[in-house]
Image (cartoon, rainbow, N blue to C red; front, side):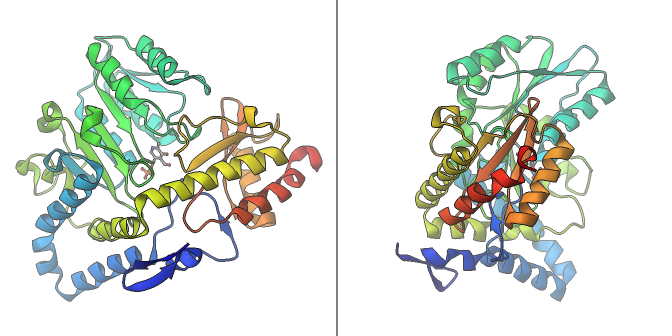
Length: 396
Ligand SMILES: Cc1ncc(COP(=O)(O)O)c(C=O)c1O
């Protein structure tokens, strides 16, 4: 394939790995957990920091307007209302802001699914403990189609009592695409507000946030949109904006949403200001080309590693869309069934196969989650397929 222009230098697609700082000795197949930041975005962040050190007072004086400018740029990329969106440090913080702004009380509940991210569940649990509300979890079968997913979640809502539904757009333990537009529509009929956890969406999928119609939507730019870590966008529907309070109050409190959420006093905001450089890298490489490449690799990895574990193509979980850059596959029975056992297997894979991959325990079973990214190659999944069976308990 041809080359492309990244920050002034010609980069061949076959050498795109050189645009990241990853250790060339490892296969990094876990972009979903911590996205690798392209060198161009790392440098942009460093330039912002350097600038700040030349005159910190002047730098901070102009920061609010630069943050607002950056937010408009990012919101436009995601199809979100720039004045109804706020930059936040990450998805977990965005979810915490939403939860603590709801005014939950005794008798209220927050509904999540069993595909949700653990720290978001902890955040909901803490807010419920604090306010006398409760968290309830609805199970969604891994192989359910869109309509079944929507119906399962909709039937679990208790209008008048469920004060928030938290649903993933792409679920972290199961790498599934959830039909969030349909779920939001079903919840609206029942007058239940929805928070869409879209941590993996920016960069991985084309998205028009406002068209989803959720009350709250939050997504990380630091996973698949190549931004420096600490960059996420929280979008809030008009009727909630006045009620949204930051976790810590600072000087923009009287300015209303979004400034009061974005301004958190003396913090390092350089990741936000450098995030457009990450988007520039994505645009330069071609978002569609990147997505096709990454989805193809994740599917390839699922196939070859699945075959090495004796799984037929029918036994491989369907992500609900061929365009996802993450796929999971079940490990043999008894393997990685607890958090600690999963972490132990991930460490063994890294030590023995020089491969970084997510191993998870979900629904009483162990799973491998494989990601595809521009710096990955088919040989890396082949190496995992060849070495993994020998690392499993049954062969030790
Ligand atoms: C669905 C989901 N939500 C939230 C998070 C947390 O992201 P962060 O640590 O950036 O808040 C993750 C991280 O993988 C995730 O997958």
